[in-house]
Length: 444
Image 1 (cartoon, rainbow, N blue to C red):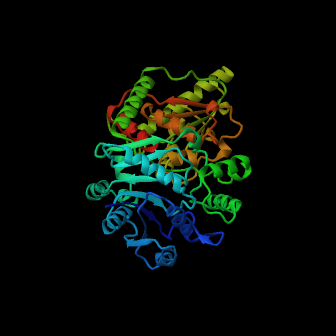
Image 2: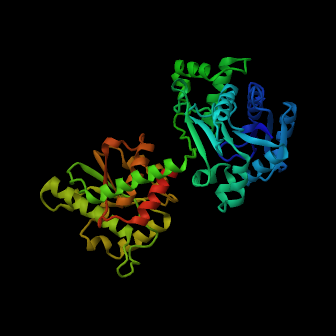
Image 3: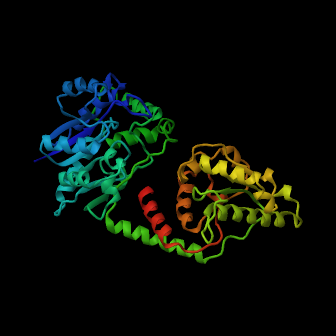
């Protein structure tokens, strides 16, 4: 078996169509990846794994021209494509590189291999974390880990991403993640190509070095640090990448989240203030608030009623009298179905029964909200503009995750203006809290 690089590539990318086929200085992006990967001194083989479709066959001349081996496999089952490619060319361990990293650094490839070889008991998954995105995205995976993932995975997403199953099941795999050296730990730099601004930035870097193709990570960082306007070309694109962590790290993370939830449940909510201008309600379960079984909790109803309670308290602090038109605004952004349900319930008198004015309740347009990430990313900035304080109401178990979304979207949600408020009743829910702890570890 040989230590080998498998580069995954396809033409049908959604965000930037045919990105690997685009050219910089006369070379296709995939060509850049192959040429720079081949400069590795320790990788014994270079394989490009592409889908076996007519559309992707346009990549074959590029691969052959640059004297790399290739494997054509399943379009959607990337996990199987890796397994079959590794099996055919006797590769173990597999160095995974993606075709959208044209500036991948061969020196960092060799550094990763050296560090991996030093480990006495070889892990199933190895990564040096913290290099600029696109320069050091070098995962080393044992063949048996790919094989096990392929046999045990059930969900479609685990077949679409090579390390998704490993990331979800650290209890089944030995995972080793090291930190990059401090001088190269630069997660503020993104040089992989997912969208057009990424392509523009990579093109600028390549053009700066002219005919050279062997420029290094320190040289790239020096150029970008001296050219902040160029480095900022893709600053608004969020890097969405999950790094597998070992089972011990997962357990420790989940323990901290559960402790945090218990603390939130046991402490008092913040006291209402007169400068709370907007109350943002994060929708609860899909069940309509009028379809409530006897003795069963309805999270959506709890959160809405808590928001109305807060609004009345704020009003009292502002005026010391009951002038409802001066109440802070409540903003609700749920799924299309939840929004429509709430509109129906309001027509039936839900707000009147709570003595709350309709004009102070805003239900978002149907923005196809599917999750909390959507609630933050699709929140119209207009509603946030000029607000002194913004209260976010959600269930107690959900607050630790909401805190992380606020931080993720800090350009839109200024943390200094945000007040997190647990809906009532507030009590510890073991099952939901455990689910949240797992989601936080997975998403963040």
